[in-house]
Length: 397
Image (tube, rainbow, N blue to C red; front, side, top):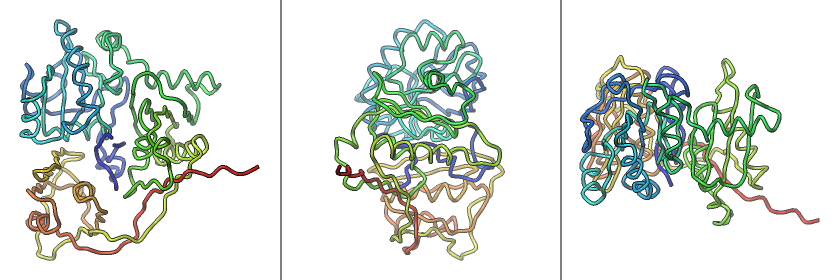
C-alpha cells in the first residue's frame, strides 16, 4: 500500500502529484520552506506564522508521532538537548500530524520539554517528511542547514547550526565517500550500500537519498512508496530487519523525473548488493474507485498552490482537512485509512478545499462524508502497481 507517513515510512507524496501542486523542497543552504503553526500545546512558542518571527534564533524542527516507537524512544534524548541549550538562541519545535486530543493525551503521560504542536500536516508536506522521527535544522537567518534522524543530533551539530554552518554527517559524508571513489561532487550519479553506522540518520529529496541504521525492509518501502503495496516473498526475517546504510545521488536533468531515475538506481543497486529481486508488476486487484457521484456537487475550487493539509488516522476515526489540495491527494490518504488500493477516477484536476471526517473508517461512513463533496467510493477491479521483493537463490557450482 502506498504510504504517506509512517516509521516502522516514506519519501515525498508531493513527488507523486502534479508539478504545480508540489511544495517547495527543503534545500540545504536555501531559505527553509514556510511552516505555519496555529498553536502549540505546550512551550513558550504559542504560534508561528513564518520564520521571520524567529529570526536571530536557530530552530530544531522535529517531526514525530505518538504511535511511532522510535519517536517515543528518542524523547529522552531530545529533552536532554532542550535542557543543555535552554540559554542559547535555539528553539525546539516538535510537530505531529495527529489530532490535538491525541497529542494532549500523550503529553499527560510523557514529558516533552520542547514546543509541541499537533495537526501539523502542512509542515510535513512542506519539508517532504514521510519517515519519522526526523529533524529539520534551520539557522538563525531562516536557512535550511540539513536534516537527520534526531537520534544522530548532538551538541556539536547544534553548535554548527548556531554558527550558521551546514550540518555534517549526512549529505556531506555521502559526498566524501563519492570523492574517495573518484566521483566527487561533479558525479552524475552515486550509489552506496553497506553496514549501518553508529547512529540512525535519514534524509531524502528528489535527487539525494540517505538512510542509515534502519531496517532494509523500511528502506525498500521508502524507495517504492509510489506503488500500492510492497510485498516480501521468501525473504527471511533476519534479512528484512538487517540494519543498513544506503546512500544515493543523481544530478538533476532537465525534463527528467529525477526521483524516478534515483529510485531505479537504488533498486538495481540493492538487487546486486543484497541478492534481492525487487520488481514492480501490475496486478488486477479488488480496489475502491473514487468517483464523482453525479449529483452536481464538487469540492470548492482553490487558488492555493501546494496549500495545507491536516490529517489523522487512528482508533477514534480519521480526518483530512485540506486547502489547495488535489483530489489525488485525497485518494492517497483514503488508501492509507482503508488499507486497500484507492484509484482516482474523478477526472478532477486542479486545487480544492475540502474536509473529510469519520468516526469509523469504512466505505459506508466515508461515502457519507464524501457526499457533500460530490464524491463516492465504489468497489471495483483494476490493474494497479505493486512491488514484490524476493531473495535470489544461490546458484550451485
